Image 1 (tube, rainbow, N blue to C red):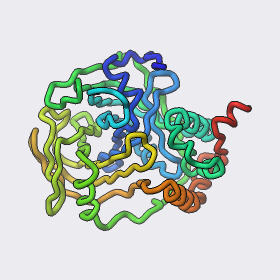
Image 2 (spheres, rainbow, N blue to C red; image 1 turned 90 degrees about the vertical axis):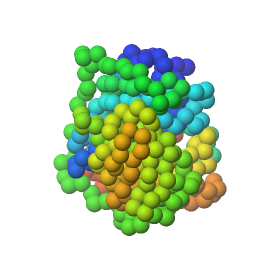
Image 3 (cartoon, rainbow, N blue to C red; image 1 turned 135 degrees about the horizontal axis):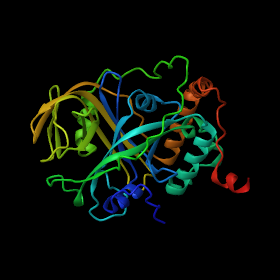
Image 4 (spheres, helix red, strand yellow; image 1 turned 90 degrees about the horizontal axis):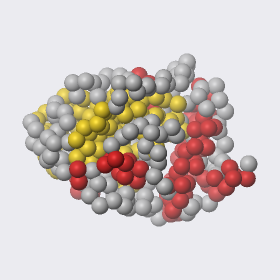
Length: 338
């Protein structure tokens, strides 16, 4: 059933916004480096926001949004959306972080992912799912769209259409942040990028380049081609880019199967980009850590179990930093019986 478009977004974008498996979410570090990762997207409960969420065990995306609420969402991966020739959609917005009620956040996320991805979660036993609090416990990031560009039929060689939010549109403040120190990173940063880059170019399709525009937004756009060079990538860009290919940048490769069941993989690089409206050189500074899942159902289950054991202490600490207990994972059938 179509959602009520209370925000007045353009009718042409509603199908892809509602049916996309993933969205490319771009935010900024304190140093002004754009970072883009694929994320699940859901329509806000009031119909005025586009919401993504990050696991409480990996709160960096939310921390960046708190520090700088200027974010962008790019809908450029139509695989599995069920639409013919959907538009490419770029959303400029301001983020609101919600983590004051972790149990409510968890309940909402569990219910929504079971509705949209029942084929995915239905393949796992309930006993495993209920032990996945490290994944289901969520910080929500509500994005209030202020400006939307879209390219009809996904044709990036054409001038995009534009929608502007009314000046009266209000952006709610974020929940108060935790007062104690941010935890140290959970991983050791990758020291090697070339092997991953070779795999990305060969297997993960056209990447998304993210740069910072003159208004300070991290602007992602799907490239037309990418090839490997000694110090990074050579990129072919769309003919009418929404921002110049200059300065600090991020290059994001990601793929998944059509139903989002058996595998998902992403590789993300940050560095510097320089070029013109058609071609650019991306010099890699480093590869970011990312989690990909692939293999048989048994292998994925084992990987999830290992991740759960690894992140259990971190989950407790992040919940305690917010003055809360670790939420219970309540499956949809439990909600119906409450």
